Image (cartoon, rainbow, N blue to C red; front, side, top):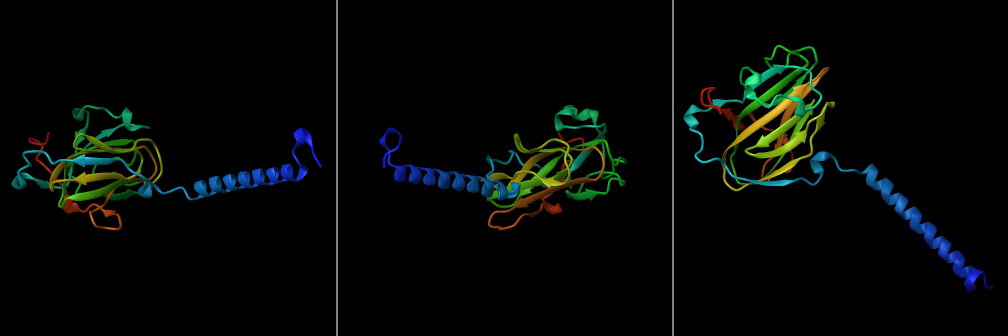
Amino acid sequence: MKNYRGVSESTWRLSLVCLCLILVSCAGTGSYAVKNEPKPEHSSAPNFQIQPVKPQPQIDKLIPGLAVRYIEKKFRHINEMPAEINAYAVGKPILMLNHRFSGEEPVFDSGMAREVGLWITGWIRFSKTGQYDLMSRSNDGIRVWIGENQIIDDPEVHSDRFSPKASLTVTEAGYYPLKILYFQRKGTACIEMHWKMPGEMQFSIIPETAYSHLPPAENK
């Protein structure tokens, strides 16, 4: 039996069945992709090939931890933070970035539990060559540079979460300039830095021994 334009009824029905199977398959694939969307730490990451500064800082002048400055202001985005370091007041060094705050306690020694911005600088030491993966965990916004490379950008108001990871190819062990802008708007707060060192399978908090800074008169 022939139907429209001479196509047999059985061929027409078979075509419809194939079309339905294709649509069902595509719909299933889309659902699976959304349901199994990779977490930030497992997603593809930009790769930065970095070199230590020359000359390296004098080790006998380095002080443990990172230098920090504070400003009291309500921000919604890192771009709203002043670009001039002198707009910030000097605080005590931060030895390690593994902190969560309840929303009632001050952020480090800022004296402020909310509406505060931090300008953090110093050195991070990569003790071996190879690939390092870095992530931040923050609440609220954060932006991180290694040297001239902006490697992490999670700049808006948000609850505790990991940033997308950044991969660094370290071709020479040594000290690298580190800069972090971070703000806490209100409620609870969090600022952590994590890395996965060459040859390691898991991320871990960057240890205190990896951070240092120069005295204020020499810290540019």
